[in-house]
View 1 (cartoon, rainbow, N blue to C red):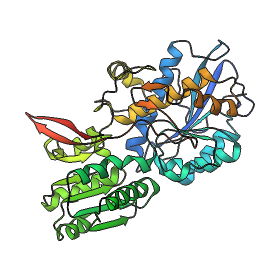
View 2: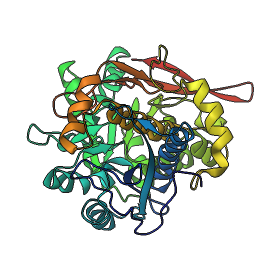
View 3: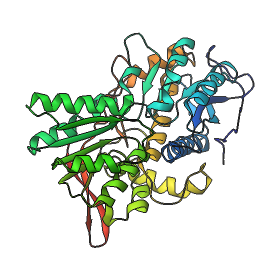
View 4: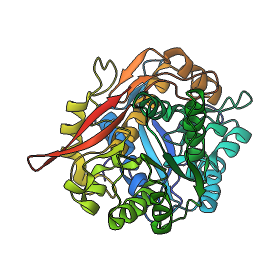
Length: 399
């Protein structure tokens, strides 16, 4: 698996320390979790592959150049939480207290990030949050979190709401999974619509574990919807679209989140023509960010990642997706932090992030955080899939 080794189970690096600002044997340890199985595996594994790819790239160049001019290689110390938040709690604790990693990185998404937030804050360890965008993670009292690769979720749905308003959409039905990631997006849509004098005819939450939307789709169809907005994780989106397609219902606007992040998975489930008309949030590689001034641009990344794909943990062959990009982008933010920090102490790592916030543009967009560590750059537009001449493409609707 290359220099950034997948350390199964409870991998450790003797002598590495996240508390005293030192590393051993010219190696900086980066602790993270991944989910090889369970509900979040389809998103977690490509994100983990992207982070591993970054580590391999850095080590092939001799390591990260610290502010004192010294180069140190990086080593991934990883544990499998199997999409289980309770397991993740134990493993985040172990990475901090036993493995004493220099840098702590979350697993994918808000559900698997949530256990890490209070643990990192308690131990005063900077938490590099890859894609856990739940708004409750970011507070004035928590100085130990940095959201790297997506906007805080309250901001996600602003473009969606504005698109619905601009198109004068009637009879809007919203179904959202009952978690902070989806709930905050729902709040944004509802509040923005209210400002325009629009009230959704349905605004319903369902358990995140929901795997059958047949009755929900049937009940919505009875009210002649002009748009169905389903906010969930990838398994929710898959189950919803399965129910929608099976019902024969035809609605002008059908919006789900994850087809824009994991298009290959959804194309394998529904076929290219089956995704035609589905609206989503387009992300890289559907969006090619211009004026990249740190790290690879999209074209360079696609080429290098495909060449390295066979050596990356648990990554299937095929087109790159946004989670690959997100993991690599997290690595870039860690790299710039290490390059900029006065030392490896946690306070200096966090202070270093503020020095380049708003000043670098990666293949994921402009990296900018607010005073609470929440990402406010990297804006998400809306878009929809188009199927023409046997090919599936994305049309970006709004920013």
